[in-house]
Length: 327
Image 1 (tube, one colour):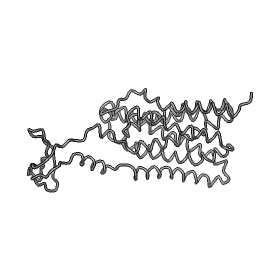
Image 2 (cartoon, helix red, strand yellow):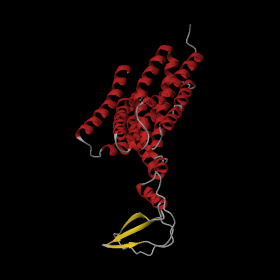
Image 3 (cartoon, helix red, strand yellow):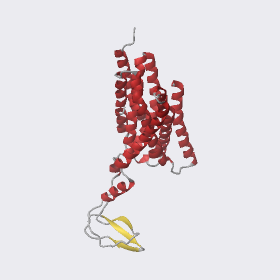
Image 4 (cartoon, one colour):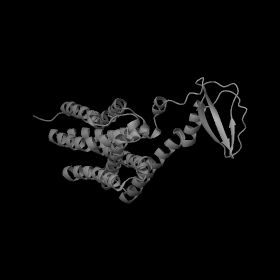
């Protein structure tokens, strides 16, 4: 019995759904959301997961995305020029993500100003503070908060008509989602698009090739999703919101699958992939080395530093195993 286009469409659609469900796998991880993510055991586990994320992203870039993009060079009319184009797409992806964060993300100064607005005192104080002064909050007998200033050894109490000052609640601060989370989701969507192209194109060849390709993508995506989950938690997502967004990025798999199924020829699929792969690689490089790695450079104990390095190497190894076994 001949393998028909309709069968390829059904099997590839089911495979794409399976790939999309890998987004909920990280929910099984034993990590709690809350203040513990900033200190204590929760912070330790999150930093190790982020180290794994850096390793898996770097492994994905240098062992999967860029080599696969270079594989299309042989199909180009001018291979020498194609190498340059791939490099330019990597740079475009990196700079594109940098500009998105620069123009859409909150700077540290913006966050500090927001906190000051929440904690400002409504009223005028009688105390005058000079330069290099220090303000502290104190509480009087009527449960009203007021500023107490110290300037050059002199103390000035701010009296006058003032309303209660309510410090910003941790819950409100935790609701802020850092732009790095959305950048990671964007990169994942484009990465999933390339996976969809691979799934659809492989099932057009045969059922066996399609199943093997799907298995390879699943083994590649599971460790990748674990790392992405850690990145989203760091950006301010809660567990379920992070899982939902990761599943939503799986729409890229279906878009890529439909693109492959309705392409006029395999060459068209390769042409589409040639630009998307290096662009995604540039985005992953930015997320790994600019957004995440700086947080991991903070001084830790020797034991914890070694644990983070081990997790990073494990992330690279997971991508290496998939590449060696299935390429």
